Length: 434
Image (cartoon, rainbow, N blue to C red; front, side, top):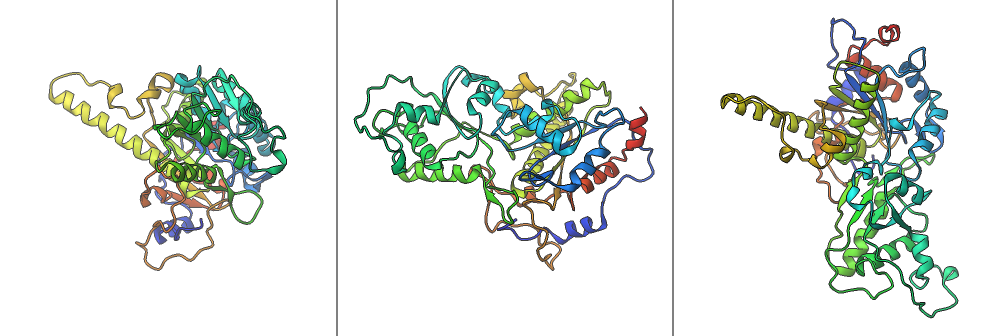
């Protein structure tokens, strides 16, 4: 990845050997106690071109009856389509049946933000944004194009799109109560202008900008990827670049920081929490009795896939540590141990919808088929691990070198599946017989 020094030599040596920390002589397991989280762009495809290793990997994950041997969820920061369309695309690419219940889009957690579902929200992005918003539960979404039609004098950058009638029409338009960024739009100048107008007028873009309109109306954003990989040799601009533009424009005009009510998509914890919920749901539907204890997240981007998996792993460790501490305190006090309360849970907002996280760890696996570039010199000092020279994560995420250090590095997704099977001492053949 551009702007980062190589991974520590120890990680490279482990990758070169193939695997480390693999179970030894224990009996292979037939029922999974782990789940797989796959990124899509740079792991399974580059743009619209399938990565050859993807089909090989997924053939290993299927039973003769066309069922997955382990729970699988696809975690993508894409947000320009509905889950079913993404599932159909993956079915064609991978040659195995994928359902929409296996898809976590960057906007999927918005289903839980029910406090905004009855509000009039401005939605920015591309693709069927109205359909997406309604599918997620929003009753009164408004597109940028619809806002522009009602207020034609606001969009003036493109001379060819300027209105011929420069008289400002009287418009009775309901207040915009929140703004939702689904993903990068097509006409950035139009979206940036109108979103800033809405923020600076308290949701009444036909009015003049207010000097005192802070904090602004709620802003929620999905997909923080600064860059992503398609067919081009170098990464392309992602929605994170658009967000950088919006943040800096707002700061330059007002002198204040743009505030987000929520940030969704990788590397946010809530996205992995939602993905774990889908993993558990699959296991329950298959009547697998053993709890899913370990998640393996396979990705190509240090600042989203690896950072996010490691961040969620950190959350799971802290959560389980709090459970253990509370149980010990209760035992010491002679009381019966109970689960951690809602107040002790950082993601308590979601417990009613998703139930508390049940996994004990989330391990990151980096593949070399996307954003991450393995063709860089390995540092001579084995203790010289990743440090930030340019931070590609979002402004509101603190950089921690440990969070961008992958648990394992492999060539491609096929090697990643082999690695997981060996780490878990999992026998696909045994599973296919059950």
